[in-house]
Image 1: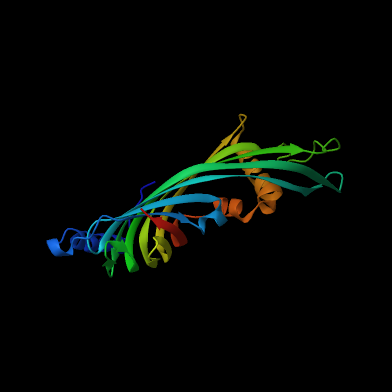
Image 2 (image 1 turned 60 degrees about the vertical axis):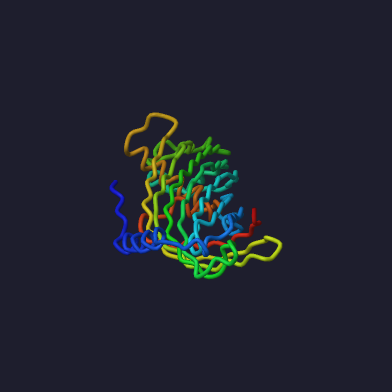
Amino acid sequence: MIFRIPAFLILALAVLSASLFSPVSAQSEPQEEALLKLNMFDFVHGRYELLYERVLDHETTFQMAINGIGWVENARGGQYYYDEETFEDYYFDAEAVLEHSGWGITPEIRRYAWVNGGVPEGVFLSLFARYEVHAFSVDEEAIDISDWPESLSIYDGEVDFSAKRTQMGAGLLVGFQWVADNGLSLEIFLGPEFRSLNMRWDFDSEMSDLEVEGAKDAFRDRILDRSSFRTQNLFNARTGPYVRFGITAGLGL
C-alpha cells in the first residue's frame, strides 16, 4: 500500500519549515524550557500517551509523543443458526478473552503566536506525523455445542486468532496551551488527520479461504458486537480522513 500525504499537508510543512529556519535576533532567544505532559483524553481509547515539548526559538517548539496500548476484556455472546435440513434453530454460546497491546510515536512541530519568557503557551498551529502498531488476540471458548448438527455449513468452530493493525498518518492541529506560574500546564487541540491503516489476521490453525471468511464473520457476529467500543473502533476504522482531539496536563521542566 502506497501512503500519499495530501497536498495541503505538504504546503503546511513548507510554511512551517520556512518559519522555523528564519533568522532570530539574539535578544529574542528564549530561556531553555520544556514541558512533560500526559494526554488525558487517550485513556478513553486504551492508550497511555506521554508527551515531551521543548522550545526551539521564540515562536517554535518541537514535541515528541510516545504512547503505549494495553487492556484486557471479556466478551460473552452467542449466535443463532438455522438448519435448513432439520428446520431448527441452534444457539452457539461462548465466552472470549480479548487482549490488546501496542505502541505509537508522534513527532510534531508547533508554531505559537508567542512564547512568553521561554514558556510555550497560547494559540498554536502544528504539523504532526503518526506511526502506531496495535496488536490484538482473541481466545474463544464454546460453553455448550454438544448438540451442534454437522449439517450446518457455517463456521462453527471456536474463534482463536491474532491480528495486528499498523497505522501511518499526518495532519494539522490548532490548539491552545496555558502554563501557570508554578509550571503546571493544560492544553486542548483539534485538527484533521489523514491516516493509512493496514490490518493483518493470523489464525492459529491452517484454514481454507472459505473457513477464514467464515471465522471472521463469526468473530464479528459473536464477539465484536458484544465487545467494548474501543475494540469495535479498532476493527471498524478505515483508511482516510480522521479528526484528532486531545486534552493534556503537564509540568514544566
